[in-house]
Image (tube, each protein chain N blue to C red):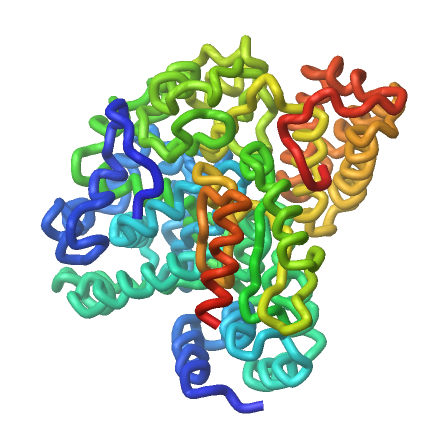
Length: 435
Length: 160
């Protein structure tokens, strides 16, 4: 289903089959260029497939933005034993709701992307790790997999071309941390989802310690069109170092929140004004968290920029998973900071002490602050605790918690100070509940 | 305990999904599927799953205790999970959660005495662009308001 009206400014590449009559069926898929990319890949050498993905400038859509072709190239070609393809469908980054749509509306596109990856690295099995809350999505995927098996697109000797490949949908059971690649692999092996130390990276020692290509759902979903049209055509839609289109999830205080497919590098202010219909109620923009809640906040004056990985990095933030959270002038940033850190404190797996302790202390401190019990020195203490977490953990969750905290406290310090000496919160817009 | 035929079929399908010797991979999905039927991860379920996957019960509990959807307490017939994370917070999710507590007369992680409803404040459900969102069991409800919440409760009560 589609949950918001599309925008005329969208460039529909990955979402072109959304809402077609017939729904997400194999017939619909085959009638709309389905498996053409895979057929193309069957006639190519593995290194030629990887070369096209490199040319496409596709960068991982899960958050880190690592070049997908490069990642595939790290898989050793001469290893004995099996190799695996794993799709990260543990979508959990606050502000992000795009993989759900991609799987719900075009599951075969994801399957085809994983099959092409299998062909490229010599893997014969793949798993889609779906967050436990997405049960209906899991069922859609299982149906799509069964359809493909019946029609000979999965299984032994696919299309009579001597390639064997199987896919399985695997449900998680509630854990943000399992969206981190190494924790996901632990969870897929039936254990607690705590991260592994790297190196070795999953490309060398991943699932069952075998070489594994692990990408986000949107990344895999971009692969069929890259093989179908060629990497260069895909690259041309984006910026010189960041190819293609991507699904931006716009949430918060805009008139038309929704998920929209736009070229990488689309201007953020234009996105808010023209695509999302401007700020709700004629209010002024205060801030944007541009790529999911792990990303440092941008003040309104910083928002005239291109939404690609490099531009966001230069602006001191991140494009992350494309979750654009829009905050208006009536919102208390101390409250936002407190809620964001409470999430990370809840989701920290406890494996690394700086993250386990840091997130818990920051959550307590910022909650107290928002409720009017803070002192001036708390602000410096918050920044110090957060800085002590940076780079000191096995996985990026520690940084993901520290970075937004540091940026909100720094950029909106006056708002925090307005809560001092027991004064009530000067903002009432976000009413109800605990921070 | 014995598995229902449906659960047994799911278990066999899971076993066939992982390489020989890696049956432990079935653990988390199996626990969740079993919980869907039993309501909670009970000691009997832990023992049964441990035996089937050739694990110690402690290994099953160790893994199960990590995951927020796996629970030891029976929920209500309708388990209502309301997101109050940042996108939902900005659009009224926290106020919605407070309203739900008042409406049902229960707090976070509590159930109504008749066992019909239970309530939980949860983290991001992946519905940020259609916030505030909640789930009743596995069903999503987007763009919720206190009024829509009351209508939803009335409809669920009528459905029985």
